[in-house]
Image (cartoon, rainbow, N blue to C red):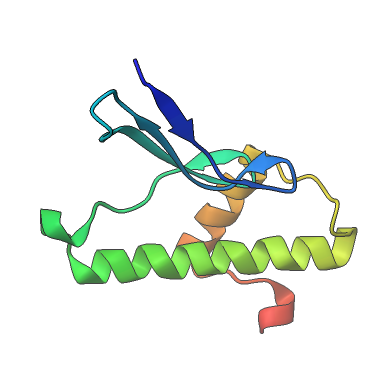
Length: 103
């Protein structure tokens, strides 16, 4: 159970960090969102995160952002992006695929 919740929104959708705080004022739960879809972020460096894995995750996130931008450029800024589409782009990025505009 939480006492209060802090959420960030962009264009009416959850975007960024969502935190729940307990009665003691400490974070009891934390999730991250991009365009209304929950995403996983790498653990903090305090947990012994491999820097290469962290850099790869950042590269994939940047690549997905490029796919989002290309999609919005082609279809329009108000185009809906589904969780399935985000997952497909993430897989493409892991395979090294980038939007045509990036070539």
